[in-house]
Image 1 (cartoon, one colour):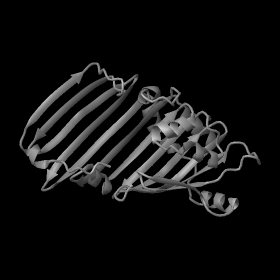
Image 2 (tube, rainbow, N blue to C red):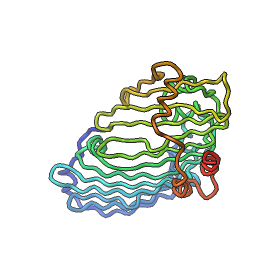
Image 3 (cartoon, rainbow, N blue to C red):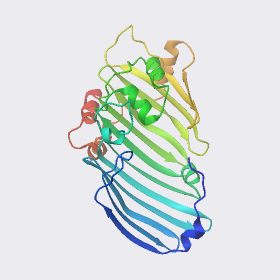
Image 4 (cartoon, one colour):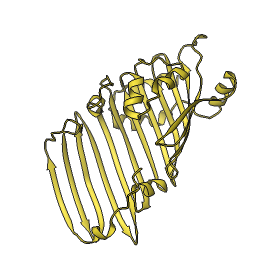
Length: 285
């Protein structure tokens, strides 16, 4: 994460009140269609509210507040993703195929003199949802940046070209420690579940993923995997021990399917009728 210090003296040198509206953004590498922003800089405090973009038929709406206190900044940010077209977000890539919809929300509050310091000791929460997201191996590589995506899927017992019905991710951040509240990638054949932590101060990972088949098949036993290392250099390894013990330890992690209570948040991001709500309803029957 960026560790370049924010130049606080320069912020104190200017006062700005800027309203800007760009009705059309022309840039093949950036999936943004328009921009509305209101920037205020006064006595070193920076507020950007709103900072909104259109992406296809969807929107990204955000607000940012940076308040100086001696040599550090108190930072607060809120962002909402509403009905974003996945094909527009990854339109500049070559490997992804699919026209899914992305929605969700996030907030962050932290103190520091750089982005890394603010996140490394910050608090926050993020939820992200995806419906009908195309092929799962391309998603892992293009969105998550995991070049070992096919190897992960092989260990989990999931074919590379499996279409995604729904993805649900819900995480919380406390003093720089990110914890997984819910993680689900649902396909017609299986459900990939996950749990773990990421320390944003040290940028280290301690994540676990495993598969639960929707229909039992003795020829399709999967291997839970551990994801460690750092954000820059993740390490992906099968969980140690006999298969039965690995599966047992995965179940013992205590993650069940995401709760039905998350449905109102899903509706805000994806709309009233969406595949993730249908998926949760089936899983909780």
